[in-house]
Amino acid sequence: MILPRNNEKEVWLNMRQAISRRSFLRGVSAAGALYTLSRPMAGWTEETPSSSELGFPLIDFHAHVEGRMTTARLLELAKERGVKIGIAQHGGCTEEMKDDAGIRQYIATWEGLPVYKGMQAEGHTWMRCFSNDVVAQLDFVLADAMTFPEKDGRWVRLWTPEAQITDRQDFMERYVEFNVQVISREPIDIFANPTFLPDAIAKEYDALWTKERMRKVIDAAVKYGVVIEINSRYKIPSLAFLRMAKDAGAKFSFGSNAHDESVAILDYSVKTAKELGLTRSDMFAPAPADRKPILTRALGLGEG
Image (cartoon, rainbow, N blue to C red):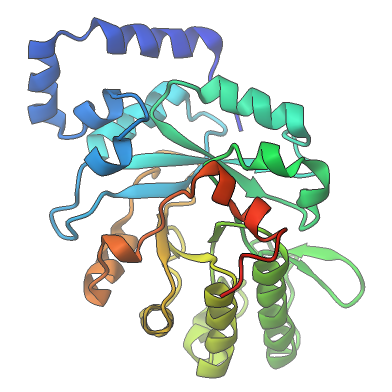
């Protein structure tokens, strides 16, 4: 991820301060979201633009600033699309953000800009690299099961060609158990990219994700209070999975998992949420600092 350069952040803040009240209100009429994205963070959740279809704020809690994507462009796209952004900075023992100092620097870099500051936890042992109270300063932590432990000890990236599936049923049994492990052992807010399958078996999604397998993942999410992401990049989970999750009392978040101009495009998330009849009470909102999973799960308060 590329953090915003100091001069880029200064330009954005100066631009925000220079907007007159009259031109500011004209901007609201033209862009729909400028008011919200120009306000300080306080109170923003309540005033984020609402989807005309859903009636509650649209928030993309799974966006990245990497490659050619700049901070200024990210904020511009967020305003154009009426979506608030959650930056998921990669963090873990072997990542660029690998310790408490890294988290503090990341938070300070984005301070004053209209985004939620989060972490995409990598490595599955990331908790050892950070202090609990420092992680709790983040707005959210998400993780997925897409880096998968094979029988020979290798960690396989399921979204790449290295994911070779020879026995579909054996893979699915181990994969479902690993999904449950991530949810139950890692103190995360959001389980991202849920039910993702490698290209080799993706066309068999409906057959491989049986009701029993879906139930195991959903039950773990509900038990540990982990939010299920509705991912617009991969168009997952299926509507059947989401219906089962809603009936079980799960909560949801929207995510583009975008590293480019597709940030804040949440078509699949909105479509399925509309079909499910989701309301504001079904959606994720960051917990107060003293109620973050990194603290409550450590105290045994995250179950139930």
